[in-house]
Length: 400
Image (tube, rainbow, N blue to C red; front, side, top):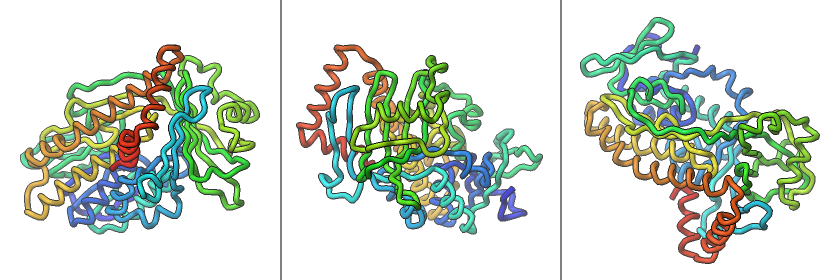
């Protein structure tokens, strides 16, 4: 178990959850001199070998990570996204975005979740104002006057003026708040893996819509032997479990890849293991309660169809961190109601729009109805032919 300070029991802020958003929040507020504890349910020594996922860090999110003091160490591991191709079924490219059109170096960067988490852990452990307790479970939260007591599984407890729930879609903190939420299952799962291919990707990401769900190709840096690499997200319906791509041999899976990947990648094969992740939707009706705030997946979980889930979480982090740092400079109690109300007001509209947009995309594209196929293809071509519309969607994808 990691814990830097051995005797402190009271903090300004307690972050429950040591994932990517929770650690970024700890970095943002800790570097401002705010006393923070991050209670992490995961074992830091196991994360790198267990998580195969990659994340698309938008241009806007990279600015947040730079502010958190970790981008300089991460950027050498990150592969820039120079262009994005949108395809539908057997159609050729219907819409293409190029970062040159916005005079930016990239739309974003693809990073391994394990690399990002390790850089964040190193940053948090280097901050004298942050304690990191892991692995540790929270059993209960108890309001006591102007603090909340956090009861830990080891029988001990700590206090904080503000609790931040950053503990994912099945959030303990959100369940403890006992507020209403919107939730549904897409009855899909994402089969993810890394692949090596014959020809370079040139920084291109591909989002290819098929009736059983989107198929994404995300550029990765070449490996040490110079092999060209990409990350694959192969969405499929859960009901097709017996025919799941998780059950295929590597040889059969490579054939499935070849059938979906554009010819310009050349020969392609899986590299390493596969993992499957269920896909669902969740949105808390309220992000706040007395002395409690939810961020990222604890507040809202979306389909990965647009690659915006973690980027929305980083925007939550930035909004709440700015409010807390400003209040700290004024010597205010960081759990005050007006701070929490300002946070929710700052984030709900943006999150709601993106949740509705991604849910709409899933429903529009994850089917094979002839009428809808005509409408969506016409819509994509229209966006590509109207420069202001294309620029708007490009900037939104960049998190700007």
